Amino acid sequence: MKIIDFRCRPNTPEYLKVIDSPTSRPVMERLGCIMPAPGTLEQWVDSIARIGIETAVFTGRQSRSTGAVDIGNDYVADTAARFPGRVVGFAGIDPTRGMQSVRDVVHAIETLGLKGITVDPFGGQMAANDRRLYPVYAKCVELDVP
Picture (cartoon, helix red, strand yellow):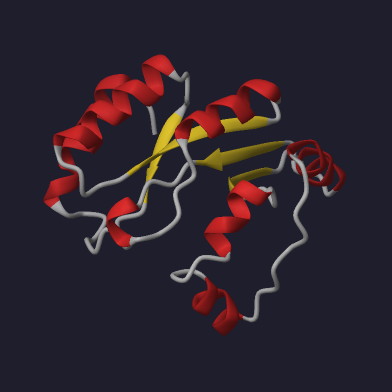
């Protein structure tokens, strides 16, 4: 059976900053999650292969407006390029940036070669069906990406 982890998070130092941030740490503690040991991208890819994950969708995170730690789309694109077929990159889009969010979608797909987008509407203090997200969703439909 083919296993795809659709929101895989590498235990690289760059990504662990998200988990160890002031906004995420209390949530992780309440859930009883332990902080994984940091590793390299190569170690992460090897570890997901060992447990049977064929493809990992690695998503960026853009939540500057909430004070959260970002995972840059360039980093995601570089990771996907280093591990083609194993890692698929999705861009993180900050939904609070208005029309700049739409331009960020175009840049991520057309320039960086990412395959879709992800938004954290909760972090932007809006529901996933908030009308402020409609232009982002419309651009994704236009570009034929999830």
